[in-house]
Image (cartoon, rainbow, N blue to C red; front, side, top):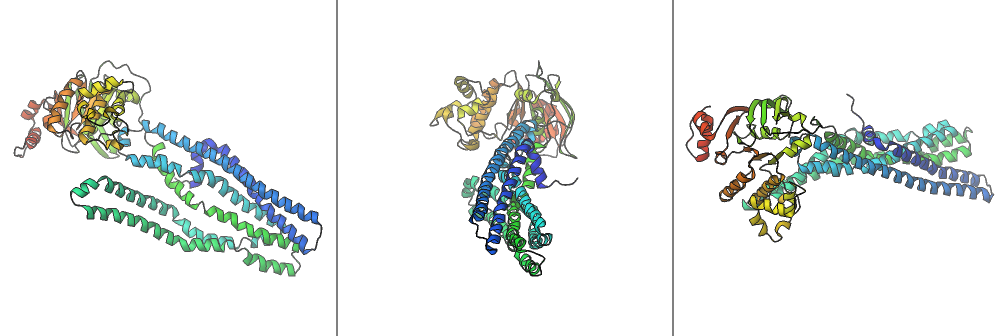
Length: 581
């Protein structure tokens, strides 16, 4: 399939504002043509002077025409930019709204695996960088090209020989610019990559400064940070250096229309085939033919960016959607049934290989297995993070595909080891579990989940702002706030993915007691490496290499499954043996 040009991509993204953008191009074009008229006025004045014409009114007439045309050009230019900017900001708003509308339809598992900084860069920074190409490139570049074309057409009307001669220097100059343009898109893409690497190194260095100081890794970590900064600077230096000569040659050669116009024009004039009344306007107008074309070079950078930006935007707007029913379901029970579930992140790389299991409403079960076994993926599939490739997942007798995503997300409270808190107060972070909850309900759930005591000891209590991503509270505190938020949601299905990983043993006992009360009559799935935390689970499912190896209670698994025995012995410190399931 033929790759689309940046201008075509830009035009397609702005499809809702085509009429305004066309209007701005038309107004700008008229303005550019109006800007040509002062050259024509000047040529008439020079002819009058050369002919010794002393009629003052003729001079005043053409001076007035030139002045009015110049003023008209300025006014029309301002109007064109005003129209294009209004259209542009409408387009940018539409693109962002389309992305915001698209994100909830995409697999949640894919969204959470994309660093939030990347999404911010696309939705805020890259979309914002489209403002100049949209608001300026279309009206200005188009009008400048048409402006040069109108001058050329007028020159053809005056004398076709001189019109062609006025163009000779332009292709030679543009040839050098072609050398720059040839790899410009690739070089720009490389600049985005090297800048992203530098930004990641800076963020890593700043965020890890405590660990760096603690383990005396200043030199090594700073060297990595410094190398990325230097690599970024070197890339741009080498890129600009490679462009310097051809760009300079292009900008200096293109406007030299006099190299051909003056000698050949003089030859035609002296041999009687070109009159002064034609020669003088040709000289003046040929000076203005290259200027508008050179102005278009200023948009080269914008054109190169559009391809990269459009690919980033398309990665969201054209991303895979989850195909769920829109009809709300009256779910009577919350039994979970998995039938021959298969799943792959990428084509040909299957993660889960036909897993079947059943979880009864109100029971607490556990998924265990080695790191990368697929247990967390399995739990996230139950929560609707992705749609499965094959098989069925049922809740209350309904296939997940038949349950609207909004309803499905409301059925499940998911608490993971990577808990995110918003830069809001603790109270509002907990209240996100149920936006309609009162302050009393928030504080009550905090008490029942073991959060209240450490919250009230803070300077502002429940109104303490936790900072970006919860940076002002400890990992354990962040985890307990997330648990309180999940409990306030009061969802019938609760999934804990390493939910107590940052909590010390003493607090873990308190949390487990609180959770045992808070999850009463709920269907609970626990994923844990620490087997001691799930010994009371009604049923344990052992997942290994994407397959269900064995299931049963803790005692049954110890008795019947040697792989589980091995994991348990490793957990409690007993010497491992060569045991297979």
